[in-house]
Image (cartoon, rainbow, N blue to C red):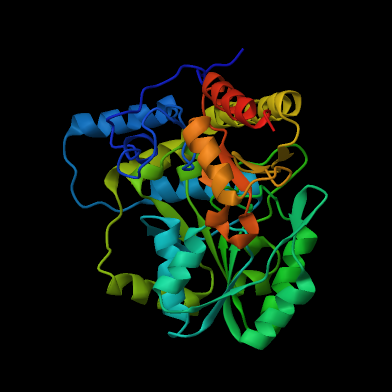
Length: 392
């Protein structure tokens, strides 16, 4: 029997929610079911709500910094969940992972330098590289047997030919749901160290893995890997705290960390969000039971989604995720263009998803579904999509 309620549908309209209140502004049907942006439709853990309520009752929201309470909670979480032992001084708090990636790119490269990604991949990776006036280099992932793999020969050749300075890595992978194996990570580290390429590892989905899949923090591979990487984490996906703007950027290499901090200071960003500190401290110290249950619920949602699609419209191929709460759907069996697929899902099935082309040309005819929602919403959305495409 679940201790927490994930089935109740919560009205998020008129709450400043990007996921729900921007439909008209973005020319989307206001009655479309919203399963695009990656936040949960569940209330935060009671311990988090309590901590925030107590701070609100206190009534003072001045400049604030994390202290021993926070760093103890974070350190214990990373050690117990990932076997990752950190030192407090390695942690730089930022308002978000994308902010940190942009900061790191500016700190560690010059304009015109090359930054490598592996598409399809989280779409802000491309824009953040271009917005810093760096050269985007892509080594496309290869889809094999329902999951993505890295073409290591192409990966290394691109690094050499394009004189790549940074590899921007998504681990676990968004949108494909891969949880990279230790052997794959070791190969990445070996190539990047060999060619003096710094790895920025976005591990924001690292807590959410399923079955026998285990996330390996890049910095735990070896002392050399830790010294050649920046690990980006946050409680935002794990505990649904994205709106509180609080992330942990872990940099054990003092030289890299100094450059990162100098560039962060140039942006004028100083103290992090007070409520972000409060929420993250409560989450990491008291939220494990809630997290275990929400992860189990999400996995059941994924299995439920797979069953609905296989029964009602098997031409839609499901790439079952090894991690994250995102489902990657392949519509390539349909005789329709990417634009037509998007139009039918949005305007006929009345479901708002993230079209795969956002994640790069390699995402053409794919769609990303957020499964972190009450099952009744997921069922309605997928039933509507299947009803539309089962006509073909």
